[in-house]
Length: 170
Image (cartoon, rainbow, N blue to C red; front, side, top):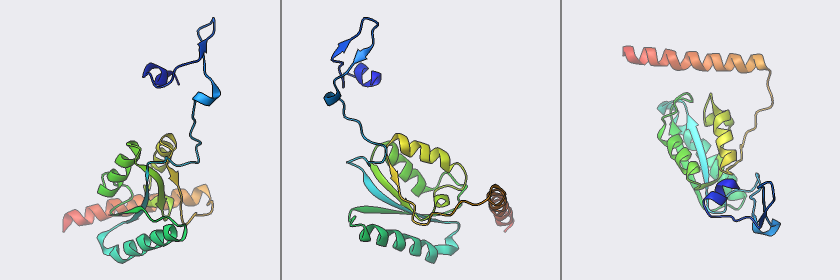
């Protein structure tokens, strides 16, 4: 509210003797955390690890499109990305982040949480909270043990680095 006041977007109705700003309730409109921004798009995001999995990428995109159609959402954009979950420079992910940071994304629909990023997805979800982007994950994975999560993460890291090593030799 202070930032809005400095920008001239919101003026207090009065100030206290101590300098605190007081606002009339009806002059402040607060967007709830679970309500998507009105002007944003619905983005469907699908990713696979390699170009060899093109059919699975099409299947993911079709599932997400069907989910949106069943929910009565017609105006969607589908972003598909072939590439590692450890690669933060994927074109589709960059387009998604750019749209969210500009306020152009209202809802994000991935198949699973790790389709966005294998590591660091918590940061992405914190950013989406700040910009009021609702996330609907189609396949919620039940909570797994911490040991299993670490094991899966280690296997993913080994797979990515060994693929890069063997790919560079060919």
